[in-house]
Length: 216
Image (cartoon, rainbow, N blue to C red; front, side, top):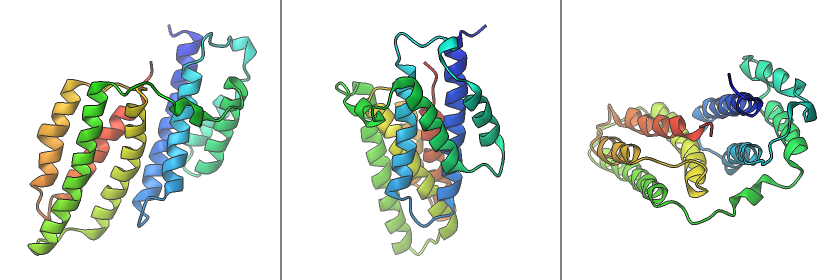
């Protein structure tokens, strides 16, 4: 049976992950991913990390948990207000960990070598997307513009959050993950045709999104 800490972190992480996927759905319909959207997604995981790092972790009797129960219901509802849900969650978390800005958590030790390898791979993937797009235009091999925009925006948001977690060593990549990026995802983009180009970008975004929210 999970401890109080484990259960609370599971609940908060699930709320954060659903908020993140709501933002993914939102940016899919936009022309570009704004700096505000990236910043809000990053602040979410920084606040989560502050809660996770608390030592000693507060006892159940010291916390007001009704907001978490309500937030779980709100984020599951289709008509839930994403911005309001995130602000309520951030207010609750600040009441637990203190009012210091979560940005303070960004003063990290040297990035783990495997994480730096993955960050370098993400840069390579971003360059591959740009290069392949130009090649397809030059070769008159058209791709679906709407599908491309949605996939590119998903990639942009996922990369912003995933790269930040890697840089801060909040998660640690594996050799198998790096190998998949280098041997499957990047070559998939590099060798894409117009028909497959958006899907190969989306595969990269999905890969990153799957790694972002982990429970320690």
